[in-house]
Image 1 (spheres, rainbow, N blue to C red):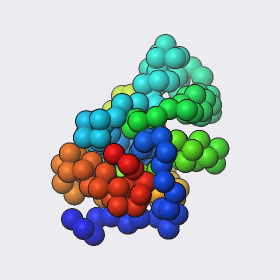
Image 2 (cartoon, rainbow, N blue to C red):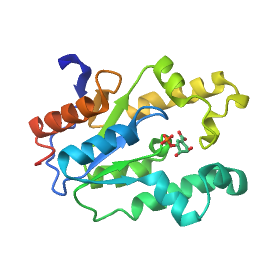
Image 3 (cartoon, helix red, strand yellow):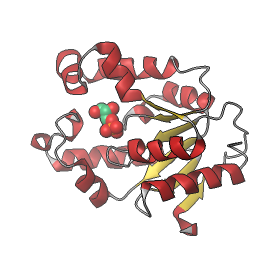
Image 4 (cartoon, rainbow, N blue to C red):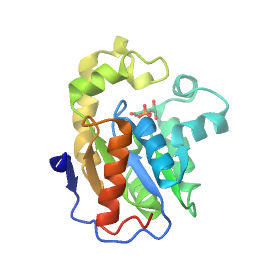
Length: 189
Ligand code: S3P
């Protein structure tokens, strides 16, 4: 599995707060791998979408329908900003977090950003027809979703560490992330 990793050239800073930020498209495994990372690393798991839903008091689908996507992006950016000062946590973000440059600043301040990469067919199979993923609504067409993924891939690739999430179980992927971050001096354990 050695070739499933590619570290970004900027992997040089040491993480002082023990956080790990996960990014990737819908279906990349951010929540499942995040749960394993939290378990293995003795960290808290923070799911940004869950924070938005509890703060707004309604589902993501309802937020998109009532307030629109831009408002959702504002709530998302705000939820991320509110995590400033956090320590020893895995932060599972929503697939669209990478779209705003300000979110990158906030994520990098929290800790190393890890991209969970998966091929299109795997993502498509995992996403299915999830009613709480408004952007993955099959009625809008799978081609539209694929274009969104293609547009985002170069953004995800800006992460500090890129990990293939299709190789091995979520626990194995999580263990390899921790190992790699420790090697790079980005996670003290
Ligand atoms: C989104 C992904 C979702 C959620 C929202 C928008 C996106 O999170 O934030 O539906 O733009 O890709 P997951 O990636 O956890 O499904």
